Image (cartoon, rainbow over all chains, first blue to last red; front, side, top):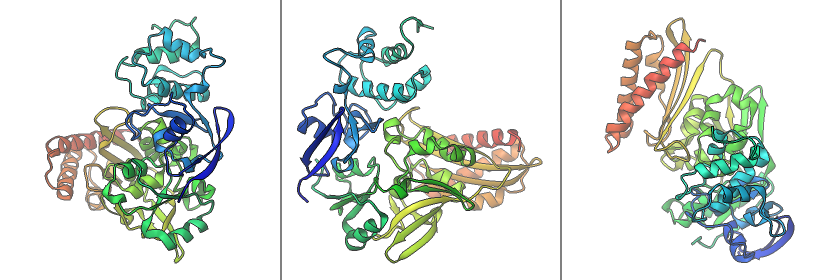
Length: 161
Length: 290
């Protein structure tokens, strides 16, 4: 037992941290690295508020343990904005009213980021399926789906069908 | 709070078997963690003896999907996302892939493993009914040797299997499916996405000129563990594929499930739904040629 040192890539940088290996990735990110964009909602993998990318795939950070991320690449919501400038997806979220209380937003952004990385031109149906693991109790999802859709296709193609 | 646990991450199965040989009673195998981690944090009784986690997610040989003359072998630590993305599985074992589509969310499918799904053996484990109709067997290893057990024998009771503390499931073998079967997997949850299954059915049917040539039938969630109804299958073979007979078969399935579970508060709802769904599946499979 006792703490061990683990090395991984966090938001593009090589990092190492001394931790108990059975701690959750969620706690490592928030407590050890102070990256509190990643939220804890349900803690049992149902709400998606803690969604981060693990080797490019969306996962619930509450269901991954520190010992499992040795050598892995982790991306959190803090990596989306560059030099204080929100990325296109984040801007669309604001424009479309996809952010209300904001608690689901980091997880929602990370699920959308994973989707657009693997499938740059998703259908609305695919967007719905891919954010099914992210609960939002404010928006009713429509604005979120529109924001992701417009990020994929640009503003020119009007999305109100 | 997570209880304090030892954590190891072996890189080979030999290493895992050594650890299980010495610490099997207090060790839990960890792969995707989607059942184990919440279970530990919620202090579920079935994990109360766990003092050590053995993470097998870094062991390459347990993460392979392989094709051979004996069928397809799926490593125990293969995730449902990987199953969804496998063309051979889609072609030869479509019911398993269909079960994977609606299992949890993207985040869950990216972590949850096939081995974890049936070893945890929740009554509602979505992969179990398809694996049962495909006659899956489980390849198990320990320092005492290797053995192959049919999945139907492996699943003993809810959240219990015949896996011994020193044993590791290496992979699941799906034998080749004979020609002429049409199949369907059905899942009913309380909502469309990210739902715990209330009813699952997997059916393979071979229509032999208007008669039931062969049939395989398994259910989950409406029974204490996923179960294949070989007795019903025997009764159903040779029957005419006409609405009256199909309705009769659905009633018999309902009776059989009641035998298995006894009356429950949900019976009034689940039983007629299961019967109706089974009838619809049979009707559509009978009409889809083959």
